[in-house]
Length: 220
Image (cartoon, rainbow, N blue to C red; front, top):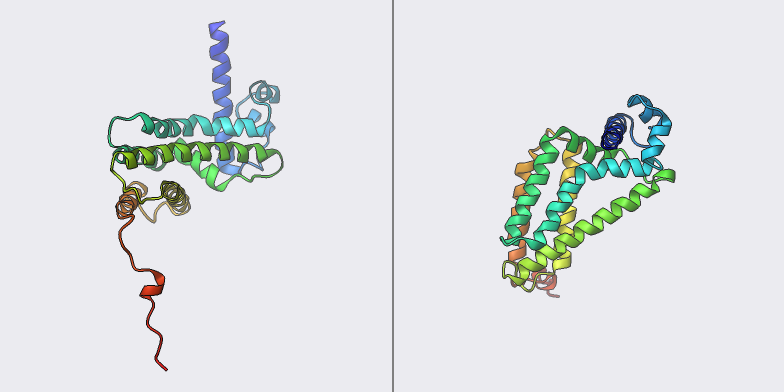
């Protein structure tokens, strides 16, 4: 029985490996389950034994790479260390994996550039939305904790900070995947994070309004 379970797990991993490589080469829409089975040296029936459809297979491929990053965010709510320091460390680890681990980079490239949310792939969009909301909630919890501990000012709108931070990192990763030779993802990412933290700490500081900073109208 144990050997049977091990064989099943090996089959599942081989299918995920084949899917990952084909998705990266052809895109998700242009890769069929038959293509994946053939690349893995198996029958299409073996694919359906483990996955009900392509969306489920794709989501499983994503989870084995992205889950550790989500778990790292989830742990922020329970850390005894500075929430902001741990948030920075978590982001550093994620960016480093994307930049230097071939599988992580390939999977993020697929997710950002080679999947269309159409027809039988709508389940992928739903799963992405779930992950997005989960990460957003973990970030919100961590920043709320930082605010409660005095690391961030009370005037800071935590929800806006969460949305802007998430958008910044997603945009940075997307830009790097398009032009990986244009900047160092880890170094630039940490500088952006430090800039965000500095801006957050200034929340509530007196700044001139648009009206008061406008040039005076010409006298008639």
